Figure 1 (cartoon, one colour):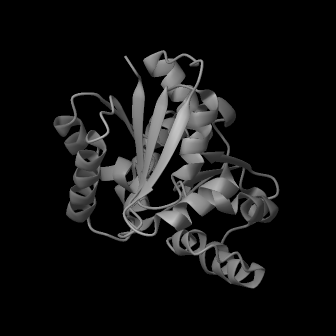
Figure 2 (cartoon, helix red, strand yellow):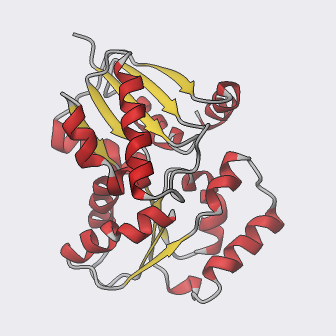
Length: 246
């Protein structure tokens, strides 16, 4: 039987997760779906995110997937129970993977900054999960403008500088030890974030979820793996970003 995974995100950000999974060759085939017509999810209310997520699941079922990865922190923060009810296969989110990655890299007294969409930060799942693991110095900041910057590939240094000032002006960046990129779009800003938080380790869902899939689901490397890219709007743009990122 072909082991086929569906990966979906609100837009191009989930490509950062898809790349890591594809390179690990954990599945025979991957169907990536970016719901680019309705990006971003993170500014939507919970019921809307759940509805969009269920519609994405139904779409991906048409490709006979037998595993689903929600490469969207906003979806992982509020829609996983509903997705698992409607799927007759495993559904994995990225928040648990991110928390798992922190436990592998952070000391208990480290200062941890979690950045994400409003939906993800308001859910408090990262903060609660990290506190349950014994971490106390946790700062959570919603940084929703990062999503359109990535979607539009608007990597203007002056724009990014002003956006960082908006969100991080009250922080001392040298005191941050770990930055959890709580949105799959954010790794595409890694170089800028690493330059700003010089002393910090950046943790993103792509690297983390590969480790989680191996550990929790005992997934082994396949001989070959292939990936297909789909989008609800402007698939050419998504494929263009995929070519750059991959």
